[in-house]
Every structure is written in C-alpha cells, then in structure tokens.
Length: 358
Image (cartoon, rainbow, N blue to C red; front, side, top):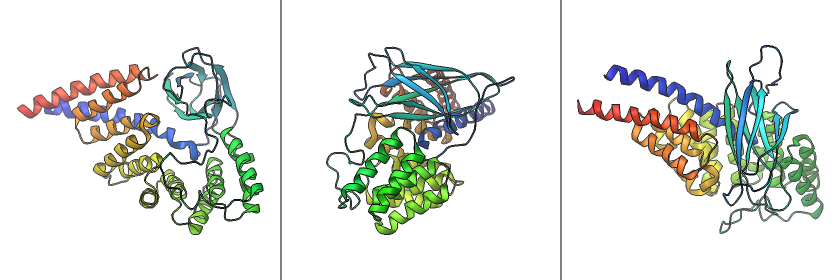
C-alpha cells in the first residue's frame, strides 16, 4: 500500500511540475520568456489556446472583444473576437511562447496581456484567463492610502513627463523599441527621472537585453536606494537567470522599502521555492501575502500554493488550495482540468490518511 501511494505521489509531482512551469510564464510581462519562433508546416503539432476575459468588476463581457495572439519573437499568430461572454480560441498553433493581448477600449479598462507556453508532441489545449483592470489616468500611481516614495514626488519637467507618458502608451501597446526611445528621450531631458529609468529597464528586458536592463535598474537604485520597483524588477531579472540568492536579496529589499507591491511578494515566493534548497515555509508566507494585497488579480497564486503543498506531501492542504481557486475564479477556462486534478488529490489524501492509520 505504501509503495503504491509513493508511486502515485511521484507521478502526481511530475505532472504538477509541468503545471508550475506553465504557470511561471504568466510572470513574464516584464521579461522575455523565450525567443521561440512558432510556425506551421508539415509535421508541426496543431495546439489550441483557449481563454476567457473578465471585466474589472469581475463580471463577464456583454459584447465581443478583440483578442490578438502574438509570437514572443515578433509577429502576429492570429486575431479573433471573443463571444459575448468573453470566450475566445486560437487553433492550429505550433509549440512556442505566445502573448495573448486584449487592447484598451480607451474608456473603462487598460490593455491586458498574458503569456502562455505551448508545448508537446501531441495536440493539446492550453488555457488562459485575462482579468482586465480599470483604466487609470496615471499608470504609476500607487493604491489609495499608500505613502508616496521619492520616485513619485520628483519635480519632473513638463517635456520629460510628456515623453514618459508617450512611452507608457507605446509600452502598453507592446511596442518596446518605440517605447524605449521615448523613455530615453525623457531621461535626456531629466537624467534623474527614476520612473523613466525603471520603465526603460523593463523594455530592455522585454527586448532580451538583460545587461542593459540591469544597468538601468541599478542606476535607478544608485540614485534612490529606496525605489522599490527597481529592486523588484532587478530581482525578476535575476530570477529569470536562475540567480536565486541575488533575486531573493533584491525582492527582500524592495518589499522592505514598500510592502504594497504584490509582484514583489509573488516573485520572492517563487525564488524561495525554486532555489536548489527551497524554503517552502517562507515561500508560503510570501504567496499568502500576495493574495492579501493582490486579491482577485492574483488568484492564480493558489496554484503555486497547491504545488507547494504537494511537495510537502500535504494532500489535504493541496486540495484546499484548488477548492479556493475554483471558488475565487468561477467559470475559469481551466475549471475542468482543475476539477480533475482535485479529484486525484482527494484520492491521494484519502490514501494518505488510510496509510497513517495502519
């Protein structure tokens, strides 16, 4: 009985590793996750990317919305319109890295994107959820009630601010080269413009220029060591390069300077879980803090907590995370897959309890 359970657990963990690696690609909005160039042709597996759009209110759209599928290395793989409840689908895709883009309507919501890794020798369906955010006239503004940092209260010359705002629009429309030029223009006018340095670093990361990205983040930190966003972005760059200890140090510094950024806690949790000697207890605390701050926008963190508890062989707690995910993300496009996994984990939990009684 014990041998059968351990064999089942090993197979389950192998499956979950694939889930985790696929989920990690969702963090790559600020880094280039790969340079694959998917294409179609003889012998190429035809995969499907299927998804659902949620409005800022959490409701489903009542009208069709344009969705673009972009190849990470450049080019458009396809463009479709969702149905009137937010469902969309792309078919006939080769393996590779894609970005799913939903443009702003210029009234109610900001542009949104999610990255998805498509892989496998047999045809598979990959799911993605797009949670739209309310349109914000000042993208660098912090949530209500937060204390502004030195980066937020710089006295920015009008022309520098204009160039920076133009860069933000280009960045949101996934034009990193053009955006970089505008951020550089802002810095030529005002060399100590911290937010422009940070955004320029982000664009360099997207363009797969990690050394240049690092230089911009470090320059911003040299000017203001309390600039949390630069520390967090530098940490993400290190994490992408598997420099775990350096990444952890940057996330800890960024979170210490400003505890209110969900991405800082999420990435710290991932670094703690991915390093050669993982610290699962600390990773769990960071994931829970991410959920506390980010709420619905970070519901996918439940999957990381699920994976974490599988690695601890705590099947009951793993099942609880999947149940919470299904409650908090009703009508999730991966609902069927999650429910199937939940059934398997509950069976494993029952076996684990029976084994403990013997």
